Length: 269
Image 1 (cartoon, rainbow, N blue to C red):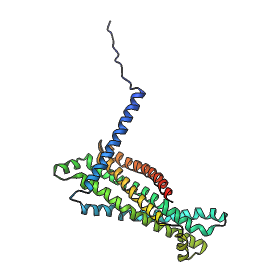
Image 2 (image 1 turned 90 degrees about the vertical axis):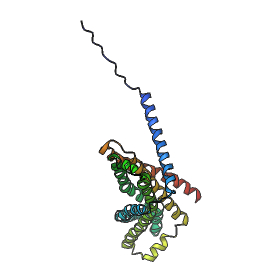
Image 3 (image 1 turned 180 degrees about the vertical axis):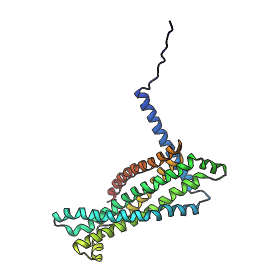
């Protein structure tokens, strides 16, 4: 009679799965930390790729203007329309320009612009670098004595960090114009009267905090997009995953940074 031996299949325990995920998470944090240190070393070392930085500023900044224009204008109009009934209920409709300006400068312009850039620019960085990684173009650059990290990563992170303050100021201006046209249509307020009332509640700290947010958000989007793309794997599937994770991680980190910066700024008020 023949004896049949059944091999035992090892099923990982829940404790082992939790441990492996924790190790993977800590490893990713370490890799991101080393990625940022590598960037900080390369960004100040010669030679500086000025031509590529200007090219990336054009790709990141100029080509994002139409989307920022549309989104910023709609944000100003919609927020003004939504705020009017609440202020009218308390007889404070004259405070509408100040309320809209505070909301746009302090929160809406930085947050809306960064989320747009995260979806448009961050995903593009992840997909572009990911496709270069899986097709071994980055390895070819290393063989040809070119520093791919400096040419591909440093230039992109630098470009979006420089352009985000400009985009946020542009979004703020466009949002204010949208708010003005809405107020002008409903209350027949003059241009001069609207902006005099609008900027009474704005101080230098508000402008500074908005620009500081812009730099932080731009750096975050650049690091998230370039990191995911630079270490992409598994062919075309890895490229799609890199683009997706670049958007998810950058948006999540932007909201975390928003909470921290708001708490710090409010401590100075």
